[in-house]
Image 1: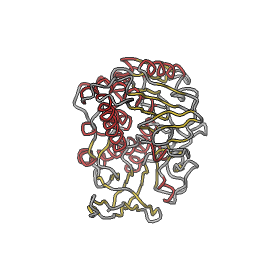
Image 2 (image 1 turned 45 degrees about the vertical axis):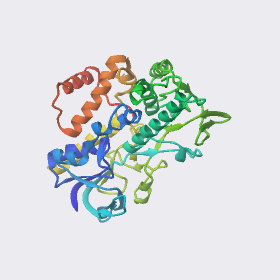
Image 3 (image 1 turned 120 degrees about the horizontal axis):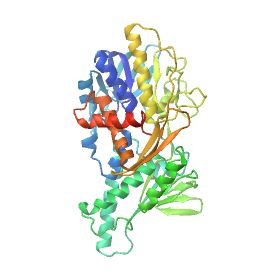
Image 4 (image 1 turned 90 degrees about the horizontal axis):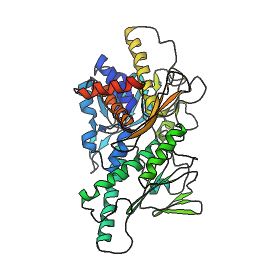
Length: 432
């Protein structure tokens, strides 16, 4: 197998690049490799976990996307790289019974883009890997949802039979966007528990949610006013928020913070990310956190023809600091590489300027009715605080704009509204 442009990783940045390149160059020149069959917008995973969004409704088939956008899709996980001979190895796909469905494959390339995202960083906390769920992929969110349903069923049966104490203790470690959004979405979902037959459960008293954050405040990277508004909304929803605490161990039934112990039936880890471990075996230069080191043009240092974007890449900004691992950075980098590659195809000179990260602000969802966030203005350091219905509509519009990028077009007037909302405020991409 051979392709001019091979993109490994179908997350937000990698998939947008594959779709936009494919629509211009076609399946003979653009190939996407991913270990999963479906794409889901990662900021939606907390809704899948809470049960307010069906993954079958939201998930987009890579095969469908490839057909509609003009690229070739290869199912499988990348396992090796031969940069000298310009080809990668993709692992075999086997059935549950061990039967080989697809053999191991070798794919040649002229330009390779690594866009494999990130995985959880447990920072050496004992029991974290074994006793928590991280929302990195659809299967993680679905595992959380099914586990929660089992726990709710058990609690409802115990309460109905009056068998002593009942209820479910949910502990979320990490007060960033993922942790805060999951806590809010879970509380909103608790209002429909009776639809599952859990009429005996009181949503507030019997579904206890605790959010633990090591920093002095939740949403620490955002302006303090956003953090305060988020804390107020969580408190109004009966969610216990504990800040300035360091988790020291996680057991099957409790989370330890020094001498303090928090009971837990299910624990979500949302306290940090790192680059996938397999990157260290590819022979590419990596930073301390495992990310691939790239130049300002997003080319892997010292390896011609290989590029990286998104969470798996360490790209330094003009200030010498790494570009933050956010969806808006991956989106911007995908557009930067699109311009780079199209110039190559047309025989034009390189862009002549490095990629420059621009922070357009952040939005955090608090269920289906409200959001909070900050929008960055054209003047450095100036931002607007937004909340309520307007912020929620902007949040929804970002999802629609991502769908437009990967689907090419959305036949609905809602997209026009989405563009209007975003352009009236600022070109915004959500934090994550």
